[in-house]
Picture (cartoon, rainbow, N blue to C red):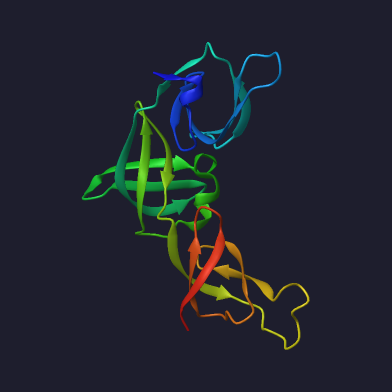
Length: 188
C-alpha cells in the first residue's frame, strides 16, 4: 500500500477500481490547512486524464500489470487484431477507442507490448521511436519559412506529422510515438 505522500510520477495505482498512471504529483501545504497531494493521472483503459487531490487518510494499492510481448496483425472496421509473440493462434482484438493516439502509428507485423490489468487487456505500448515511410509530402518552396520551416506529411499508416521542409515523399523518418513528433530522417 502507498500512502498519499508516496505517490510519484510514473507509479500505476488502483483508484476507484481502475488502473491509473500518475502523470504528475505535487505536495502542497497551505497555511492552517492539512497537506494534500495534487495529482494528475491517466486512466490506462480509456486514456482519460483526471486531476484530483489526495488527503493524508488516503492509501492506494499499486496496480499489478502484466506486459505481454505481442505482434500487431491488421486493422479492419475499427478493430485492431493482435497475437501473442511466438503464439499466432492466441489472437485478440482491441477497438480503436481503447488504443488512443497509438492507433495511428500501428503498422502490420510491428512488435508491441500488450498491457493487461486483471483479466482485461487495457492497452498497447508501442516502441517509443518507430520508423515510417512518408507517402505524401507537399513540395518545399524556397523562402517558405515564415511558419518556422515545417510542413505536414502523411505516413504509411495515414498519420499526419509535422516535419522540417527537407523531408520528401519516399523518405523514411523516425517518429516519437508517445508525442507524435518527428525525430529524424533515417534515409533519403
